[in-house]
Image (cartoon, rainbow, N blue to C red; front, side, top):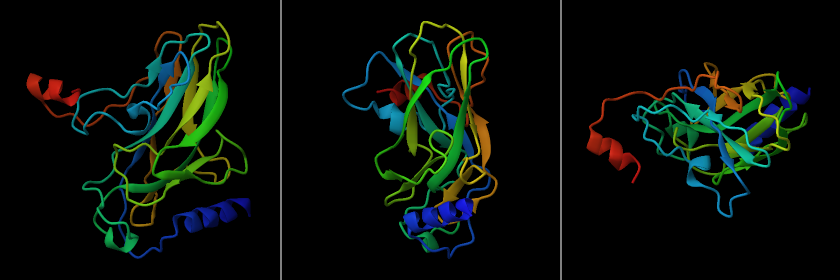
Length: 231
């Protein structure tokens, strides 16, 4: 009962009917991780916007060293969306296009050799609003667009954790089912659930890196083109 109520709320939250029979074929969910000595006065751009073009041969930043007192920001990255991204706001015009309007998922943490980090919050990025969470965050996270269709460059939101102790052991953050809905899914710009949604990779804080970071699609670039990506 709770599951279907929340799905209904999500649909009302998006307020878009389903007309087109098109979606993303195999979108993948990834976690990125960044750490800060103190809360940034302004949210760094990379938290809510993936700074590298889709053709950049760069690993996702899924590992960070563990430092006592540091804050860890874990954006949700949605990769492998169909291209081109739908340029319209109405779902019935998005047939044949890619992109997304919402994602629901959960995050679990394990620290096999020490203490876990303390969960602080799940936050929607600009252009998104948080949805309901009966089971509580981070076990049940949801956010949906307030307007346009979004591409792989746009992060739906980010989780914040605090490292409260001097433990150097690794903490692992794994994506999985939204505890309310019993699944993790991308909701396409055509107002359809992407049934092919898969987990691409999680994140690791501390310890010797054992987690493999997901790769973006690779294209050979000249040295000048690579330097231009970071200007």
